[in-house]
Image 1 (cartoon, rainbow, N blue to C red):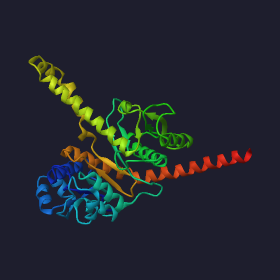
Image 2: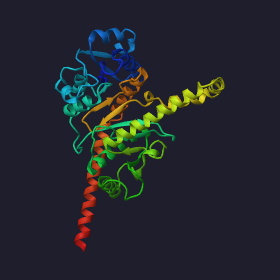
Image 3: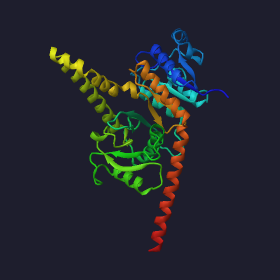
Image 4: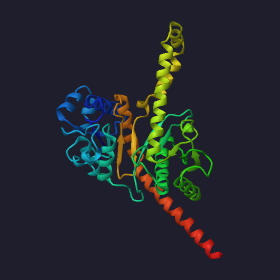
Length: 355
Protein backbone atom coordinates (compact mmCIF):
# COMPACT_ATOMS: atom_id res chain seq x y z
CA UNK A 1 0.00 0.00 0.00
CA UNK A 2 1.41 3.43 -0.98
CA UNK A 3 2.15 5.95 1.73
CA UNK A 4 -0.18 8.98 2.01
CA UNK A 5 1.20 12.23 0.61
CA UNK A 6 1.17 15.83 1.74
CA UNK A 7 1.24 18.50 -0.96
CA UNK A 8 3.46 21.45 -0.01
CA UNK A 9 3.20 24.82 -1.77
CA UNK A 10 6.96 25.35 -1.89
CA UNK A 11 6.65 28.89 -3.27
CA UNK A 12 4.48 30.38 -0.52
CA UNK A 13 5.63 32.35 2.51
CA UNK A 14 7.99 35.26 3.01
CA UNK A 15 11.16 33.18 2.63
CA UNK A 16 9.92 30.93 -0.17
CA UNK A 17 11.49 27.68 -1.29
CA UNK A 18 14.44 27.44 1.11
CA UNK A 19 12.38 27.61 4.31
CA UNK A 20 9.45 25.58 2.97
CA UNK A 21 11.75 22.73 1.91
CA UNK A 22 13.74 22.87 5.18
CA UNK A 23 10.47 22.74 7.13
CA UNK A 24 9.14 19.82 5.10
CA UNK A 25 12.43 17.98 5.66
CA UNK A 26 12.17 18.48 9.42
CA UNK A 27 8.57 17.27 9.34
CA UNK A 28 9.64 14.21 7.33
CA UNK A 29 12.05 13.28 10.10
CA UNK A 30 9.14 13.42 12.58
CA UNK A 31 6.61 11.62 10.34
CA UNK A 32 8.32 9.06 8.15
CA UNK A 33 4.96 7.47 7.30
CA UNK A 34 4.27 10.24 4.80
CA UNK A 35 5.54 11.19 1.37
CA UNK A 36 5.49 14.65 -0.15
CA UNK A 37 4.39 16.36 -3.33
CA UNK A 38 6.46 19.54 -3.61
CA UNK A 39 4.77 22.10 -5.85
CA UNK A 40 6.76 24.97 -7.37
CA UNK A 41 9.75 25.84 -9.51
CA UNK A 42 11.50 22.51 -10.13
CA UNK A 43 15.02 23.94 -10.43
CA UNK A 44 14.79 25.82 -7.13
CA UNK A 45 13.19 22.90 -5.31
CA UNK A 46 15.81 20.47 -6.64
CA UNK A 47 18.61 22.77 -5.48
CA UNK A 48 17.05 23.08 -2.01
CA UNK A 49 16.65 19.30 -1.74
CA UNK A 50 20.41 18.83 -2.08
CA UNK A 51 20.69 19.67 1.63
CA UNK A 52 17.84 17.32 2.60
CA UNK A 53 18.36 13.83 1.17
CA UNK A 54 15.78 12.38 3.60
CA UNK A 55 13.06 14.53 2.02
CA UNK A 56 14.36 14.08 -1.53
CA UNK A 57 13.96 10.31 -1.26
CA UNK A 58 10.31 10.67 -0.20
CA UNK A 59 9.21 13.43 -2.56
CA UNK A 60 7.90 14.07 -6.04
CA UNK A 61 8.12 17.52 -7.64
CA UNK A 62 5.24 19.11 -9.54
CA UNK A 63 6.74 21.93 -11.57
CA UNK A 64 5.03 25.30 -11.50
CA UNK A 65 6.57 28.75 -11.86
CA UNK A 66 3.45 30.85 -11.21
CA UNK A 67 2.99 32.15 -7.65
CA UNK A 68 0.10 33.85 -5.83
CA UNK A 69 1.22 37.25 -4.57
CA UNK A 70 0.99 38.05 -0.88
CA UNK A 71 -1.22 41.07 -1.52
CA UNK A 72 -3.13 39.59 -4.47
CA UNK A 73 -6.93 39.78 -4.15
CA UNK A 74 -8.54 36.32 -3.82
CA UNK A 75 -10.80 36.77 -6.86
CA UNK A 76 -7.79 37.34 -9.13
CA UNK A 77 -5.83 34.49 -7.58
CA UNK A 78 -8.82 32.21 -8.03
CA UNK A 79 -8.76 32.74 -11.79
CA UNK A 80 -5.17 31.40 -11.77
CA UNK A 81 -5.84 28.42 -9.53
CA UNK A 82 -4.84 25.94 -12.25
CA UNK A 83 -1.48 27.57 -12.89
CA UNK A 84 -0.16 28.59 -9.45
CA UNK A 85 1.72 26.50 -6.91
CA UNK A 86 -0.97 27.14 -4.30
CA UNK A 87 -3.80 26.14 -6.59
CA UNK A 88 -2.05 22.99 -7.80
CA UNK A 89 -1.28 21.92 -4.21
CA UNK A 90 -4.96 22.21 -3.27
CA UNK A 91 -6.05 20.53 -6.49
CA UNK A 92 -3.81 17.57 -5.65
CA UNK A 93 -6.04 16.94 -2.63
CA UNK A 94 -9.15 17.19 -4.79
CA UNK A 95 -7.78 14.67 -7.29
CA UNK A 96 -6.64 12.26 -4.57
CA UNK A 97 -2.96 12.75 -5.39
CA UNK A 98 -2.37 14.02 -1.84
CA UNK A 99 -4.21 13.66 1.43
CA UNK A 100 -3.54 17.21 2.60
CA UNK A 101 -2.12 20.52 1.38
CA UNK A 102 0.08 23.00 3.24
CA UNK A 103 0.76 26.58 2.14
CA UNK A 104 2.28 29.69 3.72
CA UNK A 105 0.86 31.93 1.02
CA UNK A 106 -2.01 34.42 0.80
CA UNK A 107 -4.70 33.36 3.31
CA UNK A 108 -7.67 34.75 1.40
CA UNK A 109 -6.55 33.13 -1.84
CA UNK A 110 -5.94 29.79 -0.11
CA UNK A 111 -9.40 29.89 1.45
CA UNK A 112 -11.06 30.72 -1.88
CA UNK A 113 -9.18 28.02 -3.78
CA UNK A 114 -9.77 25.39 -1.11
CA UNK A 115 -13.48 26.08 -0.88
CA UNK A 116 -13.94 26.02 -4.66
CA UNK A 117 -11.88 22.87 -5.23
CA UNK A 118 -12.86 20.79 -2.20
CA UNK A 119 -16.34 22.13 -1.40
CA UNK A 120 -17.84 22.02 2.07
CA UNK A 121 -18.75 18.76 3.76
CA UNK A 122 -22.42 17.69 3.85
CA UNK A 123 -24.04 19.44 6.80
CA UNK A 124 -21.56 22.34 6.82
CA UNK A 125 -22.70 25.69 5.43
CA UNK A 126 -19.35 27.48 5.72
CA UNK A 127 -15.80 26.34 6.43
CA UNK A 128 -13.93 27.97 9.31
CA UNK A 129 -10.29 28.79 9.98
CA UNK A 130 -9.06 27.28 13.26
CA UNK A 131 -5.75 27.79 15.04
CA UNK A 132 -4.07 26.77 18.30
CA UNK A 133 -2.84 29.17 21.00
CA UNK A 134 -0.93 28.61 24.24
CA UNK A 135 -2.54 28.95 27.66
CA UNK A 136 -1.54 29.08 31.32
CA UNK A 137 -3.04 25.62 31.78
CA UNK A 138 -1.88 22.19 30.67
CA UNK A 139 -3.86 22.47 27.45
CA UNK A 140 -3.59 24.61 24.34
CA UNK A 141 -6.78 26.38 23.28
CA UNK A 142 -8.20 26.04 19.76
CA UNK A 143 -10.16 28.98 18.33
CA UNK A 144 -12.40 29.34 15.28
CA UNK A 145 -13.37 31.14 13.11
CA UNK A 146 -10.34 33.38 12.64
CA UNK A 147 -11.22 35.11 9.41
CA UNK A 148 -12.88 32.82 6.89
CA UNK A 149 -16.34 34.30 7.60
CA UNK A 150 -16.77 37.88 8.76
CA UNK A 151 -20.32 37.04 9.80
CA UNK A 152 -21.83 33.86 11.23
CA UNK A 153 -25.37 33.04 12.33
CA UNK A 154 -26.41 30.68 15.11
CA UNK A 155 -26.44 27.66 12.79
CA UNK A 156 -22.89 28.43 11.63
CA UNK A 157 -21.68 28.80 15.22
CA UNK A 158 -23.16 25.43 16.21
CA UNK A 159 -21.44 23.82 13.24
CA UNK A 160 -18.17 25.53 14.23
CA UNK A 161 -18.56 24.06 17.71
CA UNK A 162 -18.96 20.55 16.29
CA UNK A 163 -15.92 20.95 14.01
CA UNK A 164 -13.82 22.55 16.75
CA UNK A 165 -14.65 19.79 19.22
CA UNK A 166 -13.66 17.12 16.66
CA UNK A 167 -10.30 18.83 16.12
CA UNK A 168 -9.79 19.37 19.86
CA UNK A 169 -10.37 15.68 20.61
CA UNK A 170 -7.39 14.93 18.38
CA UNK A 171 -5.24 17.60 20.06
CA UNK A 172 -6.17 16.97 23.68
CA UNK A 173 -7.32 13.38 23.75
CA UNK A 174 -10.37 14.49 25.73
CA UNK A 175 -13.65 12.71 25.04
CA UNK A 176 -15.63 15.90 25.64
CA UNK A 177 -13.61 19.10 25.07
CA UNK A 178 -14.83 22.22 26.87
CA UNK A 179 -16.47 24.52 24.32
CA UNK A 180 -17.48 28.16 24.86
CA UNK A 181 -18.79 30.98 22.69
CA UNK A 182 -16.79 34.23 22.67
CA UNK A 183 -18.93 37.02 24.12
CA UNK A 184 -18.68 40.38 25.93
CA UNK A 185 -19.80 38.77 29.18
CA UNK A 186 -20.67 35.42 30.70
CA UNK A 187 -24.25 36.27 31.63
CA UNK A 188 -26.96 34.52 29.59
CA UNK A 189 -28.52 37.80 28.42
CA UNK A 190 -25.26 39.23 27.01
CA UNK A 191 -24.38 39.45 23.31
CA UNK A 192 -26.14 39.33 19.98
CA UNK A 193 -29.24 37.25 19.33
CA UNK A 194 -27.21 34.82 17.22
CA UNK A 195 -24.93 34.11 20.17
CA UNK A 196 -27.84 33.49 22.52
CA UNK A 197 -29.56 31.30 19.92
CA UNK A 198 -26.40 29.25 19.36
CA UNK A 199 -25.94 28.84 23.13
CA UNK A 200 -29.55 27.69 23.50
CA UNK A 201 -29.12 25.12 20.74
CA UNK A 202 -25.88 23.74 22.19
CA UNK A 203 -27.45 23.53 25.65
CA UNK A 204 -30.58 21.79 24.35
CA UNK A 205 -28.79 19.11 22.36
CA UNK A 206 -27.35 16.57 24.79
CA UNK A 207 -25.18 13.57 24.04
CA UNK A 208 -22.67 15.33 21.80
CA UNK A 209 -18.94 14.68 22.21
CA UNK A 210 -18.36 18.09 23.75
CA UNK A 211 -19.03 19.94 26.99
CA UNK A 212 -20.70 23.28 26.33
CA UNK A 213 -19.78 25.71 29.11
CA UNK A 214 -21.55 28.87 27.96
CA UNK A 215 -19.63 32.05 27.18
CA UNK A 216 -16.03 33.17 27.57
CA UNK A 217 -14.66 36.72 27.53
CA UNK A 218 -11.58 37.56 25.49
CA UNK A 219 -9.37 38.10 28.55
CA UNK A 220 -10.01 34.48 29.63
CA UNK A 221 -9.14 32.78 26.34
CA UNK A 222 -5.59 31.93 27.41
CA UNK A 223 -6.31 31.05 31.03
CA UNK A 224 -6.55 27.31 30.32
CA UNK A 225 -10.22 27.08 31.32
CA UNK A 226 -11.54 26.20 27.84
CA UNK A 227 -10.46 23.91 25.00
CA UNK A 228 -12.44 25.41 22.09
CA UNK A 229 -13.47 29.06 21.62
CA UNK A 230 -16.16 29.60 18.96
CA UNK A 231 -16.87 32.94 17.29
CA UNK A 232 -17.36 34.61 13.91
CA UNK A 233 -14.34 35.37 11.73
CA UNK A 234 -14.44 39.13 12.31
CA UNK A 235 -14.35 38.91 16.11
CA UNK A 236 -11.98 35.96 16.06
CA UNK A 237 -9.44 37.68 13.84
CA UNK A 238 -9.47 40.80 16.03
CA UNK A 239 -9.07 38.71 19.20
CA UNK A 240 -6.22 36.67 17.70
CA UNK A 241 -4.28 39.73 16.54
CA UNK A 242 -4.82 41.48 19.88
CA UNK A 243 -3.43 38.42 21.69
CA UNK A 244 -0.44 38.15 19.34
CA UNK A 245 0.21 41.90 19.60
CA UNK A 246 0.12 41.76 23.39
CA UNK A 247 2.58 38.86 23.38
CA UNK A 248 5.00 40.84 21.18
CA UNK A 249 4.51 43.92 23.38
CA UNK A 250 5.42 41.97 26.53
CA UNK A 251 8.52 40.40 25.00
CA UNK A 252 9.70 43.73 23.53
CA UNK A 253 9.07 45.47 26.85
CA UNK A 254 11.12 42.87 28.70
CA UNK A 255 13.93 43.16 26.17
CA UNK A 256 13.99 46.93 26.59
CA UNK A 257 13.89 46.66 30.38
CA UNK A 258 16.75 44.16 30.51
CA UNK A 259 19.01 46.34 28.35
CA UNK A 260 18.33 49.68 30.05
CA UNK A 261 21.26 49.53 32.49
CA UNK A 262 24.16 47.40 33.69
CA UNK A 263 22.11 46.27 36.68
CA UNK A 264 19.29 45.23 34.33
CA UNK A 265 21.69 43.27 32.18
CA UNK A 266 22.94 41.39 35.25
CA UNK A 267 19.33 40.74 36.22
CA UNK A 268 18.70 39.36 32.74
CA UNK A 269 21.55 36.87 33.09
CA UNK A 270 20.09 35.66 36.39
CA UNK A 271 16.56 35.36 35.02
CA UNK A 272 17.53 34.10 31.56
CA UNK A 273 16.11 30.56 31.99
CA UNK A 274 12.71 32.03 32.86
CA UNK A 275 12.76 34.54 30.01
CA UNK A 276 13.80 31.86 27.52
CA UNK A 277 10.86 29.74 28.67
CA UNK A 278 8.56 32.73 28.16
CA UNK A 279 9.98 33.40 24.71
CA UNK A 280 9.51 29.76 23.70
CA UNK A 281 5.93 29.72 25.03
CA UNK A 282 4.97 32.87 23.10
CA UNK A 283 6.78 32.01 19.87
CA UNK A 284 4.05 31.60 17.19
CA UNK A 285 6.25 29.10 15.33
CA UNK A 286 5.61 26.61 18.12
CA UNK A 287 1.85 26.76 17.46
CA UNK A 288 1.98 27.21 13.70
CA UNK A 289 -0.59 25.62 11.42
CA UNK A 290 -4.13 26.96 11.07
CA UNK A 291 -6.67 24.56 9.57
CA UNK A 292 -9.61 25.15 7.24
CA UNK A 293 -12.27 23.01 8.91
CA UNK A 294 -15.40 21.80 7.13
CA UNK A 295 -13.91 21.01 3.72
CA UNK A 296 -13.78 17.64 1.96
CA UNK A 297 -10.05 17.47 2.58
CA UNK A 298 -7.33 18.81 4.86
CA UNK A 299 -5.77 22.21 4.12
CA UNK A 300 -3.30 23.81 6.56
CA UNK A 301 -2.20 27.45 6.50
CA UNK A 302 1.28 28.26 7.78
CA UNK A 303 2.34 31.74 8.92
CA UNK A 304 3.93 33.58 6.02
CA UNK A 305 6.86 34.54 8.26
CA UNK A 306 7.30 31.07 9.77
CA UNK A 307 10.76 29.63 10.29
CA UNK A 308 11.68 26.15 9.09
CA UNK A 309 10.61 24.86 12.51
CA UNK A 310 7.29 26.66 12.17
CA UNK A 311 6.69 25.16 8.72
CA UNK A 312 7.55 21.73 10.16
CA UNK A 313 4.89 22.24 12.81
CA UNK A 314 2.31 23.16 10.16
CA UNK A 315 3.16 20.05 8.13
CA UNK A 316 3.00 18.00 11.34
CA UNK A 317 -0.53 19.31 11.94
CA UNK A 318 -1.55 18.10 8.47
CA UNK A 319 0.04 14.71 9.10
CA UNK A 320 -1.69 14.26 12.42
CA UNK A 321 -5.10 15.24 11.05
CA UNK A 322 -4.70 12.67 8.30
CA UNK A 323 -3.63 10.01 10.78
CA UNK A 324 -6.57 10.78 13.06
CA UNK A 325 -9.06 11.08 10.17
CA UNK A 326 -10.39 14.53 11.03
CA UNK A 327 -13.01 14.67 8.26
CA UNK A 328 -14.57 11.42 9.47
CA UNK A 329 -14.70 12.72 13.03
CA UNK A 330 -16.48 15.88 11.88
CA UNK A 331 -18.96 13.86 9.81
CA UNK A 332 -19.71 11.67 12.81
CA UNK A 333 -20.27 14.74 15.00
CA UNK A 334 -22.65 16.27 12.46
CA UNK A 335 -24.60 13.02 12.18
CA UNK A 336 -24.91 12.89 15.96
CA UNK A 337 -26.10 16.51 16.00
CA UNK A 338 -28.82 15.78 13.45
CA UNK A 339 -29.93 12.72 15.38
CA UNK A 340 -30.08 14.60 18.67
CA UNK A 341 -31.93 17.52 17.07
CA UNK A 342 -34.47 15.07 15.68
CA UNK A 343 -34.94 13.59 19.17
CA UNK A 344 -35.43 17.04 20.66
CA UNK A 345 -37.90 17.95 17.93
CA UNK A 346 -39.90 14.77 18.48
CA UNK A 347 -40.02 15.38 22.21
CA UNK A 348 -41.27 18.94 21.69
CA UNK A 349 -43.99 17.75 19.31
CA UNK A 350 -45.10 15.05 21.75
CA UNK A 351 -45.22 17.60 24.57
CA UNK A 352 -47.32 19.94 22.43
CA UNK A 353 -49.72 17.13 21.52
CA UNK A 354 -50.10 16.16 25.17
CA UNK A 355 -51.39 19.66 25.94
